[in-house]
Length: 156
Image (tube, rainbow, N blue to C red; front, side, top):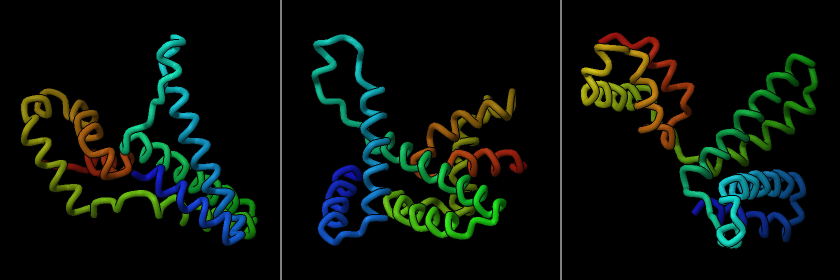
């Protein structure tokens, strides 16, 4: 599991005194823990049970962190803060190391075409309705923004 890999890498960073890597790994684990807490049911008996995130939910947390870092990099570039750009890029490298490899544009187009073929009637009625189906099916493999971008330019 991704979370266990992050925990073991955190211990390695702690032992090697790699403060920057340790910092981002702690941040990632804190975000995962927050998501686990949000996921727990509110009643007291069930709240004592451990509620781990699925791999897909963990990937979602990592994608959110990566998106925030991309935005920070862009803002730092606009502010001509090269030190922050460099720091955020290093953090982004750590985060993306735990994300699964995304599909290429060609593979993504093929997957989207398969989904559209399966949902031809829905696509004929309302092409935008297929966006939700595609995002749900492919969000663990690809950033949802890429799915929407390809669907907007899709011509059957």
